[in-house]
Structure formats: structure tokens, C-alpha cells
Length: 405
Image: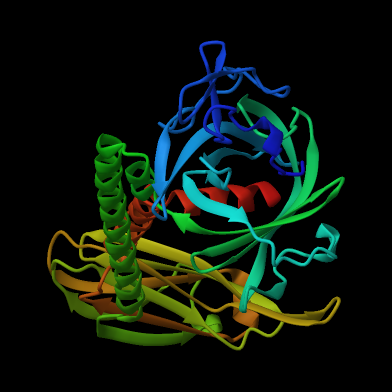
């Protein structure tokens, strides 16, 4: 649409360009004179309100008074919608207040924009110079008018489609729309909801929005706290996993020394304590072969705990050379009573031919990382939920990324 005011439509009583349509009647927004409806008047009621603003409300902008004479609902090709309020001063100066996914921007016509461009000249993410500053193309697409309400002072119809591009740098925004009869540029800035409601004299709503912003900020801070705690927990988890405790026994046999009924290594004393013990098994020299090993912890009364693992070390060539191996394993356990213990080793009969070494180590005072891992996981979930609940823009970005994927 080409947003051009027709001076012949001014109020004959006071000359004001702004008129409002309520209760089936069109009136001058400034002197109240009854006027004939515009040929493109739309009574509204076809799409719901997404903010407390209503037709006929007045706002103070730059020391001047503006009237909300109408609103437009736009939709892009992906189905996202946004709302635009048309604000007119008494002499016809127009500003456009946009509400998009909880974010507000105010803009007006920018005559310095290049009239020779085409929207297709731009690509999302490109940087260009506008108004003496470097800006980035934040979005590009085609907008469709999905709803109209009020006395919009230029022809507009539902279903009308226009290519557009948006540019942003800090709080300053630019946009360009390509209509059938030319290019229109707009320049504006971002506003927060409390500022918008204050401009319209909606003090109660402004106060509620300020309180809402405080709650959102608290949620973000709380989320960041939990995220930091979860990172700390994961770091401590990694540290704890690398601490093996105090070694109380180490022994080694070769695979051919392991008897069919098992071979004992030890003894060594162990006693119950707050931290768990760890039984460590390993092997080596397994070139293109494998060894199954089982270690059973025993005391005078019999087996107490067991662990087993198949060790192997292989290389090969498919699309490229590869080398894969499993040559060590460890399992944690706790004791109910103190005593002298041994480890009985078993190996598969084929292992004897390898002569591979089998190492047994036992540690006490092992730092267990599982509680820290649980705390880190819970903290990560809580932190993400609280941070996203306090950052609606991040929620939309995440939704868009998931949709694109």
C-alpha cells in the first residue's frame, strides 16, 4: 500500500486529518464533528486485540498529540503475525506503532531512503549503510494484510501483499516496503511496553508492565544462577571422576597364568568408609584379539562383589584407517564389614594363547561423581526453564530454530 494522505479528506470544521470510527459512526478525532465514513472505513471486530490499546486513544509523542485511528494485522509467509497501529496528529503527521511478539517499535516515513532499490536486492544478514550508520538486514519477506480496523486514511484491503525488509542496529530500526506504485522507507526506534502505555496515559498498565519486567529480570537472573551452578557441578564431576582415591592393592598376571578354576591375587585389608571402593581391571598387548576377564572380590566367607569386561584392541581399514579398543574397566562398590580380601581372576580359555597381561588394582576413598552429575543435570534443566521464561525473545528464537530444523 502507498501510505499517502488525501488532504481533501480533512475535517471541514477544524481541518484535522484524524478521524475515528466508533459505534457505526465516523467523527473528527479533535473537534468531534460527525463526518462521512471514509470509502475504505473498516468497522473492525474481525481480529482480537493483543494489547490494551484501542481506537480513539491519544498519545503524546515528541510534544505532539497523536490519535490511534486504526490498526492493521499482518502475516508473513511462515504464518507469524504482527499488529500495527496508525497514529495521526491533527495536521496529518503519521507514525506507526508496531507490536510484534511482545516487542514494540515506533516508526515514521523516512524520505531520505533510496527510492531506486528493490526488496529483492537484500538478503538476511547483509550489512548496509543507512542514515549514516551500519545496519544489518534482520528479516526479509512478504507481508499480507490479514485484518483492518478503523479509519485508515489511505486505501487498504485484506489480502494485499507487499515485499518488505527490516534493518536493525541497537535501538534504531529501518524498514522498506515495496508497493505496486513505489518504495516507502521508514525509520524508528524500539520501545518497551511500559513506555508505550505511559505515552497513552495508561498508568495502571504501565505500572503492571514495569512489575512484569522486574519479574522477568528476576527469572533470568535466577536461571543464570542455576546454569552457573550446573556448570560448576559438571566441572566438579569431571574432577571427582579423575580422582581414583588411595590405591590399596596392585597385582598382575598374564592370561596363560590364570587357572581354569580361577587364580587368586592378594590379600589386602579393606574397611567400610563413607566413600566407595573401586575395582580396576585392565589388559594390554591385544593385537587383533580379545580377552574376557572376570574379577571376583572374596573374603573368608566367600564372594562379595564381582566385575567383568571383554578387552580388545583392533585396527583396520574401511573408508580410512581406524583403531578401536577397550583395555580397561572399573566398578565401584561399598563394604558392610572390614577384613582381608582377595580377587579371584577368571579368563576365557582362548586367552591363554595371547599371554596378555591382566592388571588388578583396588582403591579406597573413591570420590563418587554421580550426585554431582544429577545436581548438574537438574540445574541445567531448571536454569534453562527459568531463563527462557524470563526471555520471550529467546523462546521465539528457539522455536524458529527448531522449526527451521
